[in-house]
Amino acid sequence: MIGFAAYGLQSPEAALNDIQRSQFDDQYDVLLVGEKQIPLVIAESNTPITRGVAVMVSESGRNPFSEHGLVQLSTALNNVGWVTMIMPAPTSGFGPAPDQNANANQQADTSNQTPSPGSNGTSDDSVNKASVNRIEQAAFDQHEQQIILQMRAIAEKTRQYNGFFLVIAQGTSAAWLTKIYAQNKLDYPDGMVSISPQWPDRSYNQQLPKWVSQTPMPYLDVYSAADTSWAKATVSQRKIQSLKSLKMMYRQRELIGQTMDSQQYARLGKEIYGWLTHMGW
Image (cartoon, rainbow, N blue to C red; front, side, top):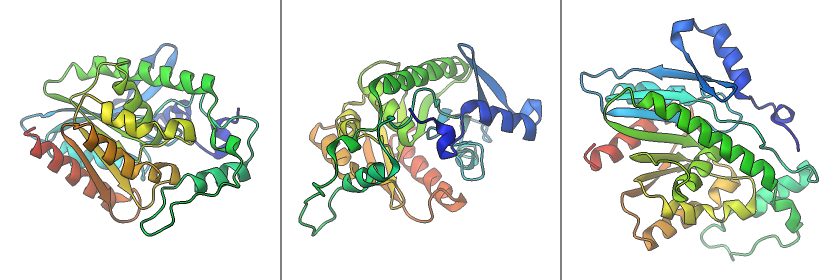
């Protein structure tokens, strides 16, 4: 299995080292998950009345504390009454299977796109079918268990605050948490914001719309033109399946603009605020 270092991605341990070098001790916390130390940044609400806690989980291997990370969303939520808790996702167990190469993976990524309106709806059948399954089962299960442990650990900290419990997750973290909540493997939050959910594995990715429709909590489904083809492949079906299942409080929104810059995070903050206000939060 190819590790995260091969792709220049960052582990939670590396994120902790970065934040320890750049921040004062009172500007971050450490979440203990078994023997692992996960960096955690908590930002208090800027309003007299706190609406609740928003736990934000980054895409696997991405630093949420960077200038392009989820920390950019934190201030917008703090200003409308939310305490935010930001942490990186686990990287344990996750990576492409060892018998695939980069060219096959790139082909599989392209072949999994949903046909655009007006196309003939066909896909490239010349792509090796084996190349579209990238995550080994043992690695998938290991990563899922680790993210469950992290969410259980952070739940203890959220209990220090009154109000709603909101989860905001990106990419593979959004996909895994969607599956976990749909299968009742974890106490579900009051609401979830899913940003570009996806897995780089066709067999799991195709099941994502079903799991979105089966989640028991209100669900804001966010996508953008800059999403990977894996995320784009399920956009329409995520909405269709949720509507067919009569899922309550489901909303899908597209983010316009350059991906995950400060302006787009500001737009995302407004979308989240509008959705929550619509529900009476």
